[in-house]
Length: 291
View 1 (tube, rainbow, N blue to C red):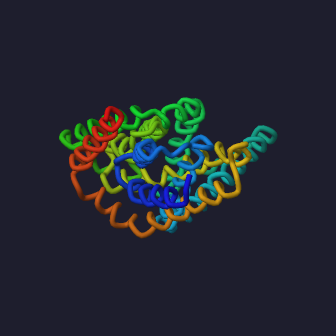
View 2: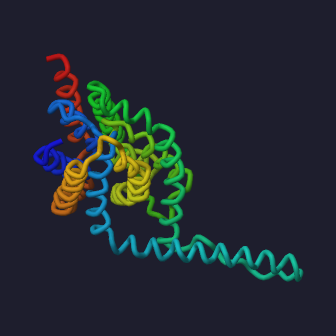
View 3: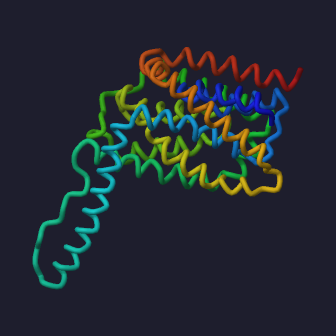
């Protein structure tokens, strides 16, 4: 892979990551069109996602700081409750246990944990199939068409409600996590599937979009650590590693300068427009293979 290809793919990743149009699907189609070989599986795509992750962290840094603090507080309360349970068993006392989940940010933190479990299970079990799908000339195009259909259904059904973190249930968080796990396949938009699932569960559109991007953080970090061993693959060289890192930096920079605009676009525009784009991109991706 040349430096020019890495820069081009980094820009594509930085823009499409924050729209419900499948950045992975775009990367797979473009790489197939350009004849770019995947020398280390899907490591490059994972690093591009890691680059745009930096843009998500910077955008939601205040919320993330609160979430991390509350996660730590929840862990400490769980340890404290275990000690109280042991104490009550030994002494016969009835000391009250601390409430683990309370307040907006603790509820949001708990929702993120619940969502991450099915995502991790599906992502890990499907990792070999994902590699095969990413090099297929047909799967990304088909995935984009399926994403377009889903977005069209969500738009015309006027799904959504007014649920905020306090009102959101753990079952809905699980469904969001399942949809995120399924989106590891190219063409199935991660943000498209997770936002759609959140809206179907009654989330407000603003919260659905925000939750979709925040819940991607543990998934992307987990995907990176599952692929980082590819740096030691025989096909990996210093030059290729540098190219991958450069692509990651470009993706992060492109994402940082576009994320606020694109997030506002997703929150305000009708999903049918994104659906039409997915149809167009999917048809072009499929047509390319028969030209």
